[in-house]
Image 1 (tube, rainbow, N blue to C red):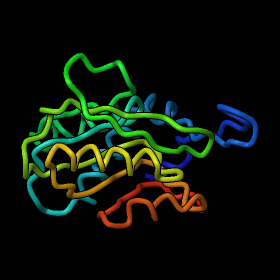
Image 2: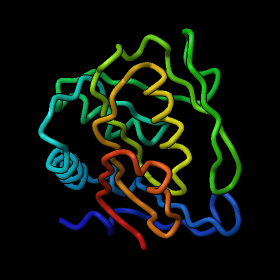
Image 3: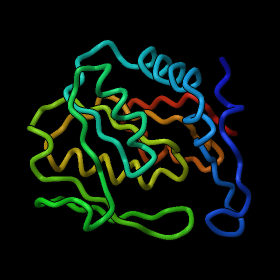
Image 4: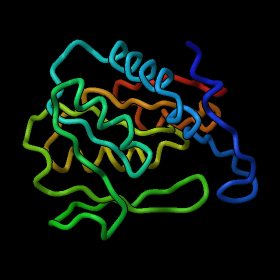
Length: 171
């Protein structure tokens, strides 16, 4: 099954000049969701994963499904002020501004093996910030995976030290 037809392109969102990749059509189709999870699982290194980190908010959808399949815990990485306990914070640049992410300080034990998941790899700033947060907590990143990769933005360069897997690539 080709997943690309389930990603809708929204021109000039969230601002003029941006071509937003909308994954909600994929989320509406149970068969496409099952296929995406199957492909994510096939692309994982054959190793134990202790926790799956999902990036707010669209990264949560598949991160929780993958955590359940892997018998692993799920950790949300969120925007500032959304987590109720002590956090580590990381600020980063986006293709259209800057933002900040947070993770609970006690979410990861030193040496735990982590799968990082987000919906789209664009400029790589969000993923790189999440990787820094995971490492601040003492986690070992096994893989960074994405539903969609916008190769023309070269985001993979910011996370080139990690194993990266993307299901749909736009060049």
